[in-house]
Length: 112
Image 1 (spheres, rainbow, N blue to C red):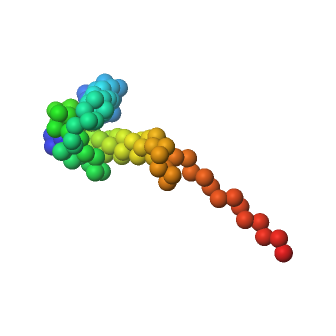
Image 2: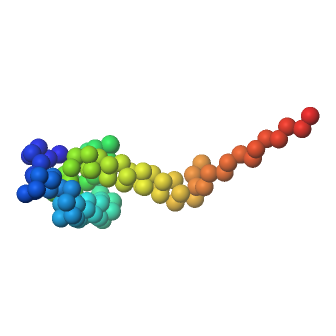
Image 3: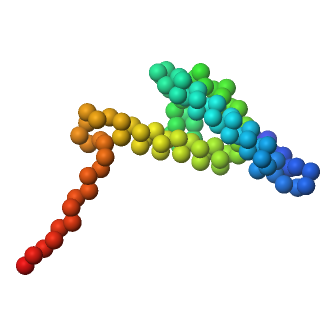
């Protein structure tokens, strides 16, 4: 994560919450996650927050992502990505009967 102090804009507002800072953060985030998708066939060797694993080829994109965004935002985006991938993995694999759409049990009606 970034260890440098947060930058203040001229009016005392944190620079990373302004539109330019957010746009830079989103661009770095999208570049990192695009690298993850592109290098998905490689063995993940690096560990990010919330247990996200990524290949060494994405190390520079991850460093830029972590430096351009607040640590709490990085953690949030990592969680969001992991949750999206988990749901996608569960819904995509049609061969496993435990995966796919969840069938809820029908309500039990007791008739005396």
